[in-house]
Length: 307
Image (cartoon, rainbow, N blue to C red; front, side, top):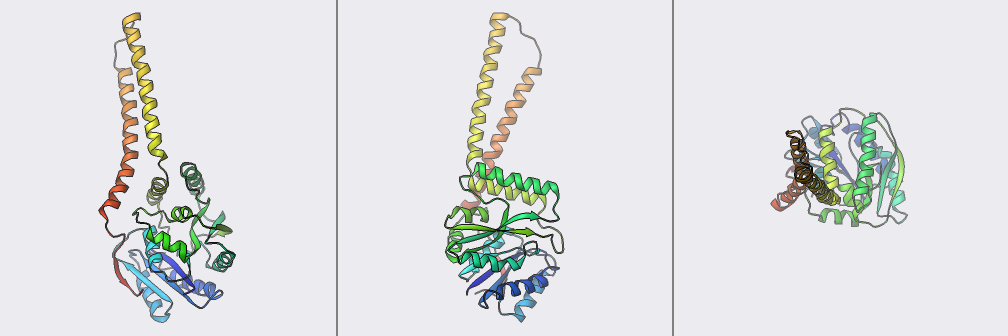
C-alpha cells in the first residue's frame, strides 16, 4: 500500500460524498495503490450508512465504527493504527483542508522528508476571536514547551510509516498528535495553503472542546505550569512574610494597629485564590496520570472492515 488517508468523521453526512470524490481524484493523481480509512467517532446522523455504502462500492474505502464518541484525536489515532500505507495522510472531513493538496504534500515528502505539514497562510470564514485565540495559543504553547510545534497548523499532513509507527507506540491517553509528531524529530517541513470555509454542517469543535484540547497540548508537552505554581507559591509566601513583619512592627514599635477585618480578609482571599489555582494546575496533571494508570483502551470498535 503506497498511501493511506485517515479521515475522522463526526456528523459529516453532508460532506462525505464530495469528500470521497475529491480524495479519489487527488490520491489517484499520485498512485492507484491507496486506501481511505473513515473513522466514525460516534456520529448521530447518517454518516456511517453513507460510509458503509461507499465501502460496498469501492474496495479502497475502509471504515472503523466506534461504540461511542471518543474524540477527534483518538479517531485519528485509531486510523493510524489501522493504516497500512508507506505514507499516511491525515485530513478532516469538513473540506476546509483541500484534498487536492495531497499531491503537493506527497511530492514534497519524496524530497527526503519524513513529515510534511500544511501550514495555513489564510483562514477563510473564521471569526476574529477564533483566529486571535488560535494564534496566541500556539505561540504561548511554544514558549512553554520544550518541543517546537509548527505555528498555524492543524492535523492536515503527510507522514512516513516510520513516523506513524512511533506515534502508534506512544501510550498516553490524552493525545495531542501534532505535538507528538513534532516531538519525533526527523526531517520535517511545510507547504503553505489557503484554508477554506467549512463546506457544509456545523463545526464539531465548540469552545469547550477547544479548551480541553488546549489543556491537553500544554500538559502533554510542558511542565512549566507546575514550576510557575511553585514560583508563585514562593512569591506569595515572601509577600506574606513581609506583611507579617510589617504587622509586628506596627504592633510592638508604633503601637498603631487599626482594628478591622478588611486587610485580613484581603490577605486570606488572595492566598486562598493562589492556592486553589496551584491545586487546579496540579489536578490537571494528576488527572492525566490517572487516565494512563487505569490502562483502559483508548477506543472500542463496534464494527470495521479493516484487517
